[in-house]
Image (tube, rainbow, N blue to C red; front, side, top):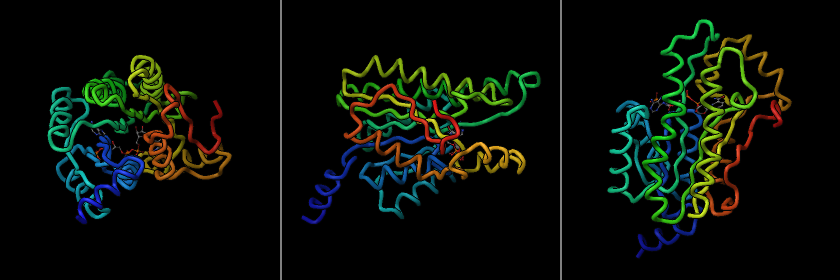
Length: 259
Ligand code: NDP
């Protein structure tokens, strides 16, 4: 009786009964997104590249009393992506909320950029979005409900010296999202891009102090963003209240770039 009441209560929350797949959930923005989607009722499968990372995600979800688990996946491995989505569907039901958050940088000026630095970034930040969307679309189409939220970047709009590979991948994700939004809009599936500015995570902590200072000076809000601020927007886009928002790129950058 108590379990039934708890299940009913969960269904009444924003994402109760939904299964959410979040890539890059070990830390930074992805960890905050996994926690927030879980807080509003979703069962969460959070992706890590290592077993230790997946175990940490499982422990964090359990601590927050969120259903789901961590899972190991390299988003550049097409066969593994298909397997992970099939396994998630078997364990919990088809994921109908997909957050493509995993991302990397390999910064350098173009003249010095190796073919590997170019391809690694495109494969992780862009090709993986194609792979995961394709793998999840069938389930969303069957459910006639779906939410795809791709994490882009302010750099995809502005450009940034030393990040031609990264900017290309993030701008492409926004174009991809607009196209897919047009393909699947009639099936209750929305596809949006969230484009954060500078958020306080490992990725931006890796910048040297002069770079951080220069960036701070360009932000009207006069601070870096917090991962939770990105997570709150993602949770809204995943909710029923956002059903009429699709194909958008939503900027979240403290005013540093007003598109
Ligand atoms: P972090 O560097 O803190 O974390 C990156 C995450 O991506 C980790 O969970 C990592 O997993 C995962 N990841 C990397 N490569 C792979 C792979 N091949 N397969 C699966 N997972 C992988 O990043 P942030 O939290 O800062 O950024 C998250 C997203 O937000 C990225 O797409 C980034 O481009 C974007 N973004 C970030 C901004 C910022 O200021 N921080 C600004 C704008 C956009 P693991 O821990 O297992 O290595």
